[in-house]
Image (tube, rainbow, N blue to C red):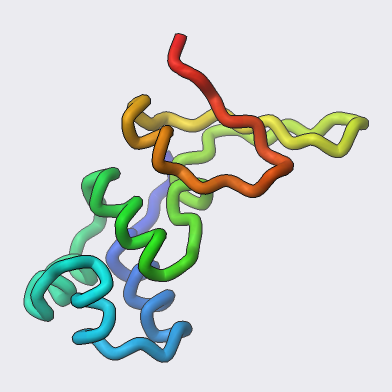
Length: 103
């Protein structure tokens, strides 16, 4: 996995959206103190990250969990992600991405 600090990335995206901490907290159904705690976290639960992705309209899952990106001549992009099936069903991917299915 990439060496990242997810809390700092989330904080940056909140700021880029000109969103107050209170507004962000409301969107993710949390208290302001929880938001400040999220900003300090190096890692985060995938279910919480999906909720945050939806609130900020930003695909954290793709940015963080994509292991490999392979392009082919048909202009389709195939990706490999590490995520449980229930969370995968909730992912919002662009039309040009192929969703993985449970084996």
